Structures are given as C-alpha cells and as structure tokens.
Length: 187
Length: 187
DNA sequence: GTCCTCATGTAACGGGTTACATGATTCT
DNA sequence: AGAATCATGTAACCCGTTACATGAGGAC
Image (tube, rainbow over all chains, first blue to last red):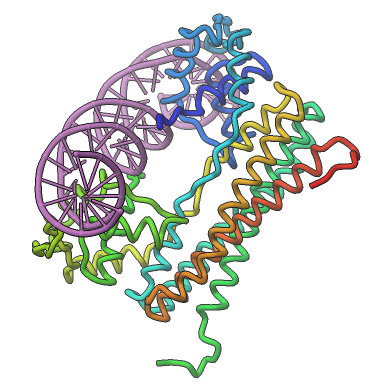
C-alpha cells in the first residue's frame, strides 16, 4: 500500500482559508496545528512546487515593503476539488510508538527504582504539555479566527488534553502498581 | 539532535529475555509489543548484523529439525551493559500526527455531515482496537510468561486501553458539539 | 556591528516500509 | 500440485528532519 503523504493536503487545507506563502504556512502549522501536526521547510517548499505543477495551487510574487519579497500561493478550483476528495476519505487511526512502554517491558534488567523514576519523569513531561494545552484555550479567544474555526480549534485542543490526561492517569496507575507498598519491603 | 533508532534496543531487550532468531524477534514484536511498537525485517536483520559487529550480541547457527536452519542470537555482557544504559535514560514523550484533527480543522470545505461521518467512522475503528486490548488480558494469563513480566505486560495493555478510551470519549464529545441541535437520533 | 526575524530554498542523511528473492518443509 | 509456514535477507523507495546557504531589513 503506497503511503501518500498528507503534506500536500495540509497545504491545500491552509490555503483554503486564505492565500499565503510557504513561510506563513510553516508558522501556522507551528502554532495552530502544533499539537497534532508538524511540517518542515524541507518538505513544504518542494511540495508547494509540485502542487503548482499539478495545477492545484498558483503563485504570485508579492513585493515586500521593507521586507523580502514573498511568493504567495492561492488554491485553485482543482485544488479545492482535490482537498474535498481527501476530506471525504476516512481518516487513518493514529499510531504511536511509545518508548516508555518499551523500557517498562524490559524493566527486569534494572532496579525497579530506575523504572519508577522513568515513569515519574515521563509524567512530569506530560504535565508540562498539558499545561500548554490548558493555556491554549485563552489564546484561541484572542486569535481573531471566525467563530466556526474557533470551535474546531477548541476541539483539537480538547483532544490533546484528553489524551494527555489519559497518559498521566496511566503513569499514576503504573506507579501505584509498581511501587512497593511498604517501606520495610527492602530486599 | 541525532535521532538514534530504538530498533537496536528492542533487539537487545528481547534477547535479554532469552536467545532467539531474527524471525522470533519479529514474531514477538508483532504479538507482545504490537500495540505500541513495530519492526520490519528490513530493519531487523541489518541491525542484528551491526549489533554483532559491535559485539553486543553473538550468533550461532542451529540446525533445523524438519525446518530451515536458524541463526540464533544471544546477548553479550557488553550488550547488557548497553541495554542498561539506555534503560536509565529518560524516555521520549510520545508524539503522534492525528489525521482526523487535520480533517476536522479543514471541515468548512465540506458539509458538516461529512465530518460527522468521519468521526463516527474513527470512533468505530477505535472501538475495534479497544476490543482487542480487552481480549488481550486473558491472553496474557495463558502466555506462560513469568508473573513479573505478566504484570508489566498488563500495564502496557492498560496504557493502550486508557489512551483509546480517551480518544473514543473525544469522538463522543466532538459529535455532541458538532451535531445540529436535536433530532430523534438512534444510536 | 551584531543579532534577530523575514523569506526561500536544497543536500545529505537517517528512519522505516514494501516488495521481492530464495529455498526448505509440512499440510491438504 | 499448491498453499502455508519457516527463515533469512536486500534494494528501492518514501517520509521527514537537520543543517546549511543566501540575502534583506530592523532592533539594540
């Protein structure tokens, strides 16, 4: 099965909001989509060129006032069609490699205390991320996006929050299971 | 930051349980670790060779009785040392690209009904996975692993279950938010 | 003068999957 | 005979990141 990259659809999707440059796209991905998506310049710029070759976007150069020139891309009718088709196809289920579970599975090679520290550490990291999500909602209010988009935005944040909370609960549960009940239990 | 692959550590970890062949490793990954990890032959076999070159594992050929010969690998003292060092380093936080959120974010391009179907579809897929997890626990009982490993195994399954339940709850929440008013809907 | 941001790009590299090749044995 | 499983492997390819190059303008 030939895995087709979603990069082109991210681009088409963002251009369906408004015309923008590759640089703008990168910034938008890094802010609005950061908690569930990422794109690098190394894929963005070449993909933009390919999309233009295929006639799904078109570009024009906008002279920069006290700034470098920008290449602003705009989605075409064909591009919108392509985007709609993709939107109608069922989304793949998320698939993650979870390193902490790998380490946990091989825990017998080190003292239990080591693994407990690992999980505590992981929990701390997750808590940090969660705090970011929680602060996000306020940011959305001030984003200036239209209300419909804000509603969708909040849903994506909620997803991040719920999944992270679940992961944190798992850490708590794992710590409960692993931690020796009594302090006298030293062996 | 040079991303080092975890493949070598999966191999070392599994060989720390008992000596086995590349084929065995693949099967074990596909059964015991499948819900949070994956490895392909295309990485497994070359990595095994590299590990042997580095002296972290050693191999011997075992004649197959009514089966093809097998190359059975065994972890060395140096290999165990390497594994322990890796186990002590903090685990990376899991990072996923969530396609459904991407599609949701661009929902304005298609009728709301389309997105609702997408989420229902996603929910169905997640439910299916969840059922597999739930069935797993029974499988562990009959696995023949030692009790300590069983306990760890169950923790990894619990992780999958908790995260999937969270994702399903998000689908429910999203459907509630998106679905137009009230319509004598059957579920 | 130096550093930061804006802006576009590319080369090199590593990670990882897929598809294929090979060949033995066992089951139907 | 044909299919399935056991077993080892490799080449081609895609995905994606990182690091670098280039150059303009603004901030300190």
